Length: 113
Length: 109
Image (cartoon, rainbow over all chains, first blue to last red; front, side, top):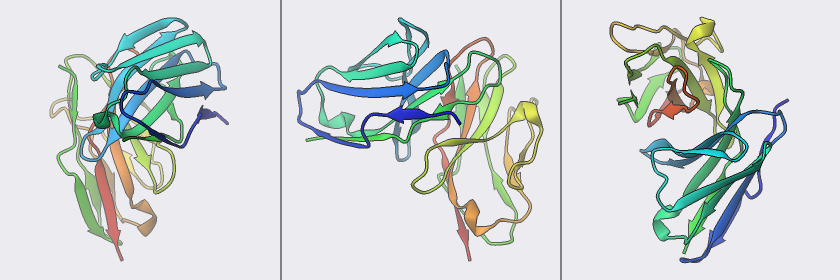
C-alpha cells in the first residue's frame, strides 16, 4: 500500500515566517509534486521533481521553493509566508512511467495570520 | 498551452439519475487523461484512466480526440458518489500532471 505522508495536517504561521512543509513517500517513486488546492481554482502545481536534486517550476512557483535531497522526501518552503498563501497543500508521488497513477498525501491546511 | 477545463463547479443529480461530468482538454499531442476523486475527509485518489478503458464504481470515461473531451459518466447515480471530481492531463513525455478546477457532484436523495 503506497503511503504519501505529509508531516502536518494543520499549521498556523505568522506573516513573514519561513515555513517548511515536509512530504515522504515509501514506494521509491521518482516523481514528486506539490500542489495547492483552493475552492474554485482546483489543484495548481507549484513545483515538481523527477529525481533527487532535480526540480521544475509548475504554474505558481512564486513565493515558494523546494528541496529534494533524498528520493523519498520532498520539501516545500515558503520563504516569507504571506496571507495569500493560506491554503490546502497537497503532496503527491508517482512512478516515472506513462499513464501512471499519482498518489496523494492527506494534505496540510496552512493558515497564515 | 496545456489546459483542462471542467465547466461545472457544482452538479446536483437525483439518486438513480444518469451522471455526466464534463472535461475538455487543450493539448496538441496525445495526452494521458485521468479522473481523480476526493470523498469527504479523504485524500485525493485515482478513479480511472483513459488507457485502461475500465469501469470503476460504475463510472466510465471515453476519450474523444475530435472534441478533445474526456467526460465521466455513470448511468445511475448513488448517494456515495457525492464527492469532488477532478479531470487531469499528463502531457506525453512530460512528468507533470495538470488538473482541472474540479466539479463537486452532489447526489440528491
